[in-house]
Length: 135
View 1 (cartoon, rainbow, N blue to C red):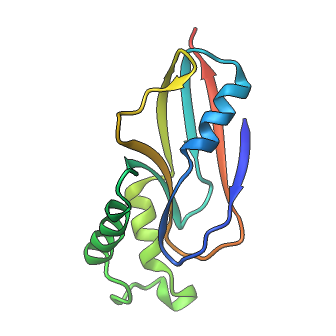
View 2 (cartoon, rainbow, N blue to C red):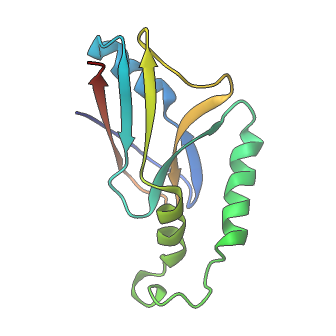
């Protein structure tokens, strides 16, 4: 298992972590298998989406905020005012699993793996990566 951290800068943002994963795979010397990426935080998520156009990331956050409006009478907001972040993170999910072939992530041409920050900024978000060899 490999763990690295990301500092987030905004309350909500998508951060491309693909390059970090590529480095971990290279260091693992595993040619074929799977890469499992997991974020152990209840107000963050891992997604795969386009990164060539940063407007996609902005549109993505804007749509999430329309589907899950902030301050909509969530009971959890009485505690720490971040219920929206919990709801979105639960729907997006904390992990992704990507095949590895010939030492490379098998992503589509426009795909990238991203951390979605939903309750930032945070000084440190952990990301756990497990590279599992093919048998």
